[in-house]
Image (tube, rainbow over all chains, first blue to last red):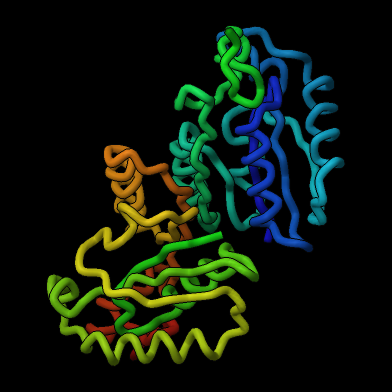
Length: 152
Length: 152
């Protein structure tokens, strides 16, 4: 099936690894994964500094090409919360716990536009050693590394 | 992976077909699907008459055995909204649009019990010819058949 997923992926941590892994699993061997990568302008709303689009894209490509994924994939710039997800024909969107409301909003907006709703796959956030979510913000603050290990 | 799904499945319609198909797809070739089938007592809260547990179970088994599913599967009685989903070790729950709140409640209750949260896969309800959801209630009312075709 055709799956969409999105993010800023900076730095690329174990939660992103889980999100991407599940997206490709769900797409299936011959499916397609469309990865929306936030533009620098859209990502600038984050509370911490973000590496440039091309650097983030390179890290994402490096990750994907090192896996045994067989589905087709494409990275497209995500200039807002929705990107092409409001109009594209696809089957399912993969989100994490914190972005489930965006997926529900996408379906609401698709419906208003006369587009069919898509299935929503919500993965549980990966936990750090301390039982709290791994997040880019926590990594940026120096609390944990990309695998959720506490930095003493 | 190990997937849980539940329902009354009476009559077994195209929405159920989609729910079961996706559950097995998500479980994967060597995964497991636990199907909670509502008990007669729990199902009696429905607004229309429900066939007995054994008749519903037989129809479900007939459907499953006629597919090319390879994952292991088991049918267990569901005596309330949650069944074994609050305590069992599993990976993902498959729900439709109308039962997403139950899945979210299950995660909340699991968390309170110190169990890890599970991933949630919400499929879009299958639409009848008239663009409204296929539902057992509509079939029971004689509006549509199990494939969502309007009954003149």
